[in-house]
Each structure stands twice: as C-alpha cells, then as structure tokens.
Figure (cartoon, one colour):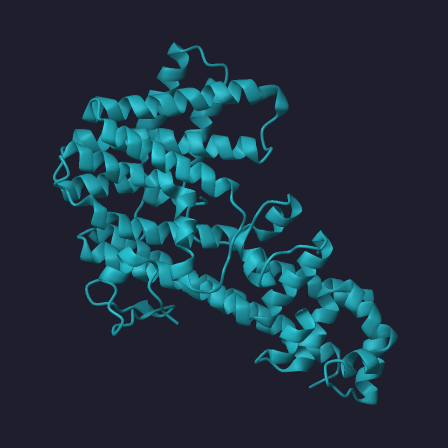
Length: 340
Length: 83
C-alpha cells in the first residue's frame, strides 16, 4: 500500500518503484540503514550555554532549564539535533554556523517541550510563572542566535512566525483523521512545523541559493511518521487525559461523539486486536518513512536517508511484533471459548 | 458500528467475538448471560461446549489475558521524536 504524501513528495515519488524494507534488511540500492547518534559534545555545549545564560538572567528554574536539555538529548531527538548540521553541510556553510544553528534549534525545541508540558498540565502550578519566564528566555535566545547569523530579515522573520503559528494551530485542532491516505494527512507535519525553521535560516543565509525547499520534503515525511507513531504510542495516556489522538480517531473510524471513555477504550482495543485497522495505520508510518528515505537521498542528505531507513526498519520490527502479539491474543481468547 | 464492522472484517467472526468478549465488559456480560442470542447477532452458531465455556469464563482467565494484551500494546522502542 503506497501513496504519495503530498504534492512535494509527489514530484519525487516514482510510483513504479517499491522500497523494499523489511525486518530482514533494507535493500534500496545505495542505502545502508544507520541511526545517527547525537553528538554528546553538542548536548554539553547547549547545556553549558543555557546554564550561563540563565545564571546571567537570574532565572529561578535554571536547573530545570538545563535538565530540559538533557531530556531532549536522548536518542529520540536525533533528527532534531543532527538536522542543522546535515543541512549546513549540504549548503556548504561553515561548521561555526552549523554549531550556532544546532544551539538555536535545541533551545527552540526545549521551548516547545516546556510549552507542551505546561499545556498538558505536567508542571506544578507553583512554578507556572517561572516556567513561562523560562520559555521566554529559551525562545528569545533562539531568535537572537538566528538574527546573529542572518541579521535583520523581514522575510525570514515572517517565515519563522508562520512556522510557529502553524505549530500552535496544529496543537489546537481536533485529531482529524479523514482516512488511511497519506496525502490527506499532510497537516500532521504542522505539529513539528518549527523544525522547518532550520532550512528557512539556511535559505536566508545563502540568499536562497541552497535549494532548501527540496530538503523540506524528507523533514515533512519524518514529521508525519513521528506524529503518527507518537499517537500510537501514547493513545492510552491521551485517552486518560482527554487529549486529541490520531490513533484513537483512526481506530474509531471517525469522531468519538457520544462515546464515553470506557466505550472508546473498548473500541480501540477491539481495533487493535482485529488487526486490520492497526495494520493500515502502521502502513502509513512505514510509507511516510520510506518516502522520507527516498526524498532525503534525492536531495543529497545521505545521513538523513540512512537514519530514516533505520527508523523504517525499526518501525517494521516494532509493528510486526505488535501485530503478531495481537494475533496471538486473539487465538488465546478463541481457545478459551473452546472454538478450535 | 463495531458489530457492523465485525461482519465485514476479513477476519473470521468467532475470534473477533472472543476478543471483544475479553475487552468489552458490557458485551461480555451480555454474551455470558445469553451466548446463543448474542452470537446469533453475528450469524454465529455456538456448540454446546462453547456455550458452556463462555458461561464458565472466570475472572482469573480474563485478567491474565488482559495482562498479556497490555504487555504487547505497551511496548515502545522506536527512536522517534514525540512532536
């Protein structure tokens, strides 16, 4: 089951060619799957930079700010840490520019994580004001670093504002899941829209000569896969907290209007155990990642392509384990009925 | 809606009925109370042995099954960010 992710992907997609990714190996010519590690030196650099910054501004939550950097410094955020360097290398920019962009991107990501934690009610109410103050410092510093690289640029400023606005709007929209067609799920990438700011900055730094527009396609594909997977992973906690969730919407086949949480829980569990809807949902993740591999390779981002290929393999392994587990549970239930 | 979906599933109906019985408490109660009628709504004919097994399902079996079910659905391993 393959379909084009969006018009950008459509331009790159070759409908006659299937990417062969499976648990046994990744056989797209020229692609050797490899998860990109996060450079620990980058995490240390960002941590100490933020520590000094918060100290100079006498921010109460200084320690929490630095802990936040450690939290986003784990392997789940590999793309976010590596993307600035991958794109700068491709654009021929100096390592010092890449380092500054890594720093700005990490501070921006820390800002987003902190906002999400606050909106999800995960911060103690006694620290809300301090958290908002910390958010302001993180975002303000990320913007200052960008201005330091590019100077005043009204067009870039408008792009950054539009990315941030898209992210905010995505967080407020319902979990609209029209069907299992990736072309109709492109809006999911807006949940990670700030990640596109890296390419906006590089485009501005190179006076639009870097061709960063093409490099947005694999990022777009990656974000769709990440959002779909995140909602699959978190559906139980999201249901418990009444948060919107695409996986729940997909399993219900529409809105949950009129259903209480227990009915939704049972309906999603039944969707899981039946397997067919789950399989289609997993296919979307595989498909987005495979499109990402192809588009990253096409626009010369080899390390990104290898990383996405490794994620694709991991997604297949994880998905197959879940599907086979559900099948096993179904057999056990049937046997208890005495229905062999 | 679920029952309609079940009818059109490519999976056979009996396992789906069994799975739902474990996962949906209301449905399980109705099924245990009157197995033949509820199964009949799915165009299924149960044997006497199956009816007896359904009526004698015990909570320990259900809890053990649910624990294993949760162990599968709770697995997350991918190195993917959480946007």
